[in-house]
Length: 418
Image 1 (cartoon, one colour):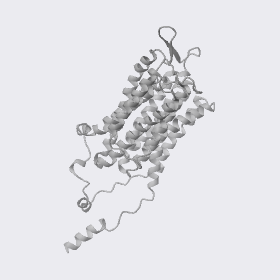
Image 2 (cartoon, helix red, strand yellow; image 1 turned 90 degrees about the vertical axis):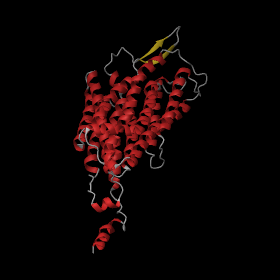
Image 3 (tube, rainbow, N blue to C red; image 1 turned 120 degrees about the vertical axis):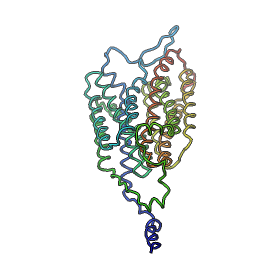
Image 4 (cartoon, rainbow, N blue to C red; image 1 turned 180 degrees about the horizontal axis):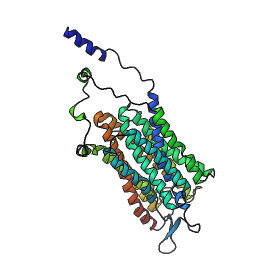
């Protein structure tokens, strides 16, 4: 009789595959939108940095100057490197990301706070009547993104692993949609204030996606028979409890964190320290226009690669860091010697730079969704989101002296411009 009971207990586990989840599209779509909305404000604030600062400057002053050397040779440079704006947009996010993994996982409270801060950031920048108010808006928007990313990625451990790929694709889409939407509205002569008010749509969309579109996960407790029929639960998979235990566990995450941090360090050293100094004089585009298109081109590369993990997977993230370092060498020598004969060559390299950055991000978190045990994945995801912020912040600090050093050089002239 006991033998028959054993057969009855085991039989539901093997004969039939689990039914197809016909509403999975809701989770995948919601995570794409959440990725878009979470990073949208960050991208917009970088795109709007010039306008945010310029509206409080004396109309008689110019935000560009020429750095004099011997004789009449000069280089056109901005007085302040865009690295300074980058720091205001990344440091608050970094501080929040450092704290978040060690706090209780109150997902609804954290997302509510992120939505409120995002909307407040747009309002502060839009209605600012002093420079400090505008900068506070940038800081608040950065904090919103810093709360959202580790929270959403930690929460993804309760869903199908493919929500990580749609989240990554959404964050890549934020780069393209954010930069293009801001540039388009400004091209249509919409004021900076009205532009920021229009963008309040995105915090509202984030709230709808999280609380209405995304399904609430159901965590089914494991039965004794289920435990006997699977090998998923082992001692190492117990959830981490306590500050000390989490701190010790961080060292196991370094293989994910270090390559990602390096990729983003090299990437943003290019974007914020060197991009604005690459200039093709005989192009039909102005220097400011070339800079904007370099950034749009970069964001397209990021979007493509962040959306590609289900088609092509890369495990050796350190290899992307090596390639990104080669990109730094190219842009550094290009700024010094101006040897590239055609702007299209530089645009291809910029696209490659974006592909590397987005690929490193999505493949890191996708690997974690498969390699890290469910009990520890929530904390691990939240911790590794700090990696890109460390790299970006360090790049912001170094981009300022690098920018100044490049501006102090005598100008170079292209002998061939097609």
